[in-house]
Image (tube, one colour):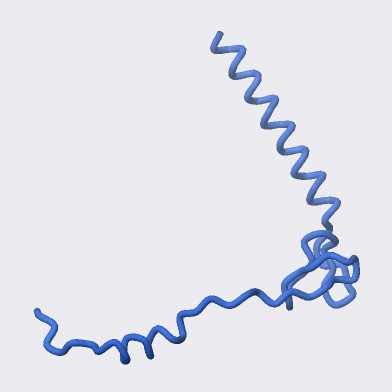
Length: 81
């Protein structure tokens, strides 16, 4: 199949006029950090005055996972030698 009609520059530009990137809209959280609108704050976990995400518990769980993974990795290294 061949292209039968050429798209003029004007038509191509009109189509691409909606392809521009926009800067994300940032707002200031109660804790002072900037966050995206209509999203929970990544630093404190609050949204509309309520705590939605327990950031401290998430950080503790992540640290525990890292510690267990590093211990597993050390055990595998010792068994290989």
